[in-house]
Every structure is written in structure tokens, then in C-alpha cells.
Image 1 (cartoon, rainbow, N blue to C red):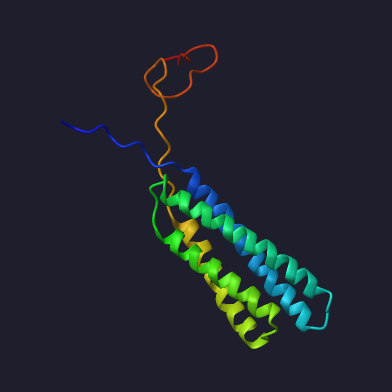
Image 2 (cartoon, rainbow, N blue to C red):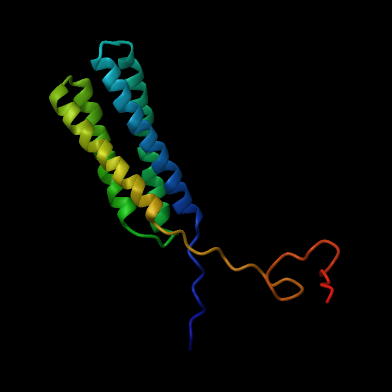
Length: 156
């Protein structure tokens, strides 16, 4: 008795992972710019730094859910799940250090956090997408949509 062939893994979980990873990468770079602006004397940047941190925390939790989808039902790798779990804990620790005004810890941890986010971003884009599901065969058996007006004749 042979089992039916397994359906190809869905592509959409990895595409969502790429979207959330890219968003996190952009937010992380924005955070470094806002922190630098604050340290340079533009004190209004601190409020933007705080708001961006809350957005980043929301996106990392969203990415944790996406990482679960990459693994189940996406049958994808396990690394996005554990790396996003570590990033989630790190973001919470970073926000705690910031509100606690532990600047030395906050800056050092921020550098490590941005590095981790960017490594995860590269990993998400290096992960190959599963092949597209095969299309149903068309009238000519090719799996392609028929041309309007029927087959094209080539003159000899």
C-alpha cells in the first residue's frame, strides 16, 4: 500500500515571514537613527523612539505567530520559531531596560538586538520558497491557460 504524495508546502507563510522580518529590520534601523538623534541633543526624538519601540514589539509578536505558521502547517524550518522567540524576549528586556533608564544596558542590548533582527532578516530572505503548486492541465495538457482565440498557428 502506498501513501498519496504529500502536497507541496504552502508558500504564503514564508512570504509573510519575509514581510514581517523586513518590517522589523526597517524599524530596528529607524530605532538606531532615533536613538542617535536623541543622544545628539534632539530630545523630541525620545518620544518617537518610544513609539517605534512599541510598534517593533507588536511586529515581533506578530512575527512569532507567523513563525508558528511557517513550521505548522507550512512544514518549514524550525529556526524562525526559536529565533523569533529569542527576539521577542530580547525586545521585552530592551523595553524594560529603557524604561528603567539603564542606559549602558539599553544601548549595549540595543546593538545586539538590531544585529539579531538583521540576521533573522537575512535568514528569512535566504530561505527558499517552496515550489508553486502544479496547475491543472489545460486543454492541450500543458498546464497553461489557453490563448484567447485558440492555438496560434505558425507558418512554415
